[in-house]
Length: 168
Image (cartoon, rainbow, N blue to C red; front, top):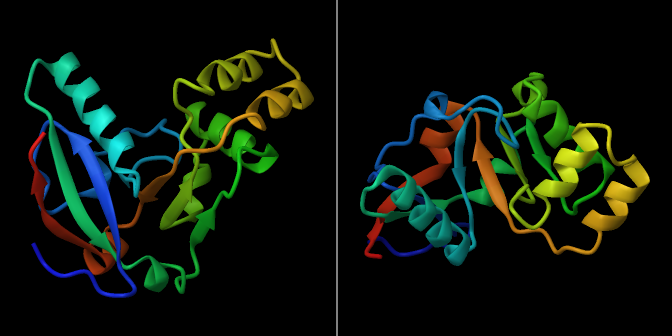
């Protein structure tokens, strides 16, 4: 594994495959931030995801490690950062999960995960069974986990460096 430079952040991608050269178009379309390669700077979050996927696929979990030059990505024009579970985040997640191409305007998106702590609220809002104020009130009770989605292959190739696979 290489050394970490000042402008690099260690990020993880949990799953069942070693991914040395991520390809953005292999991601599913209707995910939180669209079709791309997802990583997180929260090791436990990636580890939990790897274990969940391994159970579903009846395979061994793996935890891929990368160095992400996040500072350099932030100099690019097409980045979106969600700092909280707020109205902007909720409307983006809902639009993306409905198949609307909202992520196509970006090369990199970062923010909270619509995981099991908040997905019921998101789903109730999507179905029209909860109004926006109630949904935002519920969401405000949670500290977001973090996910980073690299949507453009050029950005991925330029700023994400494979740094090995950790044993689980």
